[in-house]
Amino acid sequence: QVQLVESGGGLVQAGGSLRLSCAASGSIFSRNAMGWYRQVPGKQRDVVAAITSGGNTNYADSVKGRFTISRDNAKNTVYLQMNSLKPEDTAVYYCNSKGFDLAYNYREVWGQGTLVTVSS
Image (tube, rainbow, N blue to C red):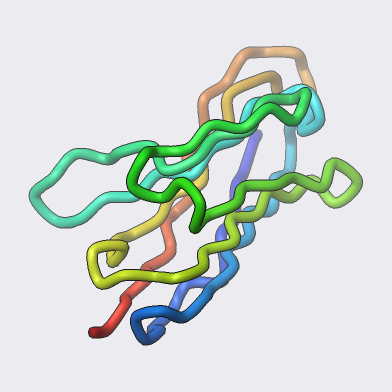
């Protein structure tokens, strides 16, 4: 069973930084595409950043130049470094995995979410 556990959310002032972590278990992590999404109440969940198994990255226009996604395959962990945070970045952030579990079954899995609050 693939599991994702996020950490690192919290309250920060505008202009500050946070780093989110997402630890994966039960998957062939190095072969999986990973992503960070965010959601505010009443709105859809949107992709923030994504990284392929080969390390290629993509970002939402709203976070380009401020956020950086990275992965450490040795630790089965993906990170989201968030700098120059703005109040509009306030949301619940979710980690997402697309790929194979240890039985080579394709899975898409979500973490439980971590709240990021940016005060003005």
